[in-house]
Image (cartoon, rainbow, N blue to C red):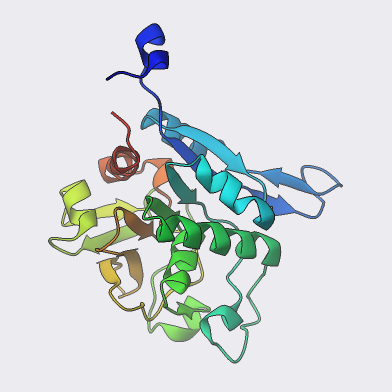
Length: 249
């Protein structure tokens, strides 16, 4: 039976997608503390059929937020997950923390996973997802990978930085239909070990992990690049598949 609102409007309900905001204590946009998010995250969700809802960092409101969400997109940012959260005994000098944002994102991501609702992690969001699922991180790629690619690419993010190789029969492969495709790259950390049951579904030519997924979940995918820039058709397919898993028609 069609709900009354849909009978009267003829418009199908868009899935509600929560996106945690970035935050700064002051400087740049405002000398006072502020929240922000790049528009292309929002526009990508809308284009794929979703209704984006931006989430300020209030851990006490997580259950209230989650009650209204069909899916969660964890975006990237110019900061890192605290190495102590994955058992590291030291912190690399390049590591920058945003403890409040990280604590909130861990809390709401865990809650969504407990409820088996779709989660998409992008760049730093993929790294956070890997830690939540029991994995660890490379704290600084140039110090731990022999002859690494330029994962902090010198050219604009609107252009490819390198290729990724996709694991056959993975969720990412089913979504994109591609064995490999170009991506942009803007990170100095990456997933190292992955947790129990987590599948590495893409790697860069230098071996760096570029995508992880949880096969037992309704939809749980993390990608190390930024598909919101739509470098290739594969990026658009990732958003489409995420929104379809959230209930988009």
